[in-house]
Amino acid sequence: MNILEERILRDGIVKSGNVLKVDSFLNHQVDINLLEEIAKEFKRRFSDKPVSKILTIEASGIGIAAFAAKEFGVPMVFAKKTKSINIDGEMFVAEVESFTHKNKNQVIVSKKFLHEGEHVLIIDDFLANGCALQGLISIVESSGAVVEGCGIVIEKGFQIGGRVIRNLGYQLESLAIVDALDAETGTITLRNQD
Amino acid sequence: MNILEERILRDGIVKSGNVLKVDSFLNHQVDINLLEEIAKEFKRRFSDKPVSKILTIEASGIGIAAFAAKEFGVPMVFAKKTKSINIDGEMFVAEVESFTHKNKNQVIVSKKFLHEGEHVLIIDDFLANGCALQGLISIVESSGAVVEGCGIVIEKGFQIGGRVIRNLGYQLESLAIVDALDAETGTITLRNQD
Image (cartoon, each protein chain N blue to C red):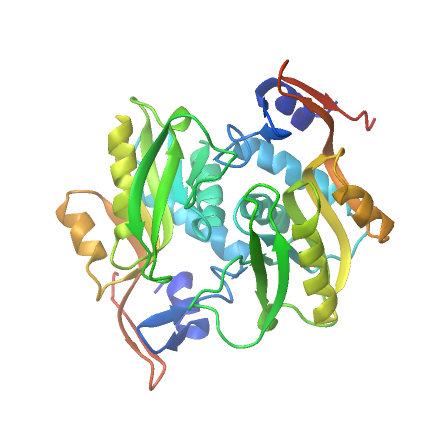
């Protein structure tokens, strides 16, 4: 068991509706030491890939992706969820449905920042049904860049996202996989990945 | 002139409506080396303050705040702009109006992550009219924690935000201050802070 898994079991809180709250260390308050360890583990798992850019999606992926980008020594791009007046010109657009917020968002990345010949590692904090990740993959493929893999901090193994991405042939590395959440007892069951 | 100022003059793009686009290095694509230099400069400017927590607001503040938190060796908290089903319980709430998006957002921070006795440095990428920063200050003050200062990457010196915050007596450090933007000529005028 790694320090992320230990932390999830210690500080993760289960809520009804298969919600796992990790807001004390990952996606509201952020433990920077843990973030650095996560980034180093992504570097280790994708060390054979010629990564030239890290791509994530706002908001909670940004801190993780920034430290991963530092490990790889490459720039980071974060996709935006709503059209901003500060983004104009040509954009890659994908429509994704959020599991958490139950709404649809357009995910956009400026065409200035993804090009043919680039090798992209996609990073995010959670993978559930995988719509956000599918949107990011779709954007990278549209750009002509190569998806070198997907690095996820916590995968909900009981939802379909992980299987879909792996079935599509992408290297998906989830540092922790949650197989079950029991809101009544507060029990978190992690998949043994050793 | 520091490397941030040089970068703004080189890669910043002026759009009509006093918009300065820095999306090639700060808030869409992110230059991680620059982020680290920014974080070190915040550490230098607030080195005499007993900072125990970094507070920012999603989304584009997160990467900057994460590296600043690493420099200070403290946790980072990012305020959220919309109510998420993943946040429940008691929250600090402030209503802020975005200059960029022309809409109102509720800024929220869980009461679990801000307490009396904490010393908070607030970090954000842009300061214009200052509503977001005022919202964050209001939240910290409500919690009983101390605002040790505000670190901003780019202040629009021709808008009122900086003066309001300084008039309120807070130590506000803006690494670059833009005094004028001319969309016709593309000219960016920076304040000499040497």
